[in-house]
Length: 172
Image (tube, rainbow, N blue to C red):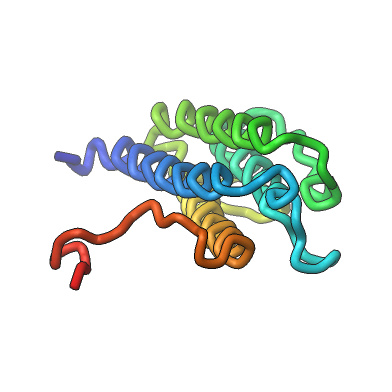
């Protein structure tokens, strides 16, 4: 049980659990898509699943690994959206898993001082806890976008990862 003295550890643990949970959903979607489908764009001005994955890597590294972990920020955001068919879905998953693993290291060692200290990330003045909330909610939002894009491409052949089996879970 978390105590006020260990709240920072609980925040770090819960943030990582959210990232990891969303990562599993992304993996579930990507495993159902072909290489071409991962890079498919609904329109030229829109992103593919692959671009969203690259974008999530950039965001997690900028906001959590660099912003909270205080390492050098080397993100080139526009490149995340400009890439076309530049990596396989296996390589994309490895990049995303690596970014989340690096974030886990930062979140596992997070201190109360780190959560409360102000810093500048992507041109914004935020506290560490604000950077954590930003990145985790951003990750979840694009995860749902990836689910939607996967379902649009696969239609009725989409395989759900979770099907409720009890009334408590929402089964009829």
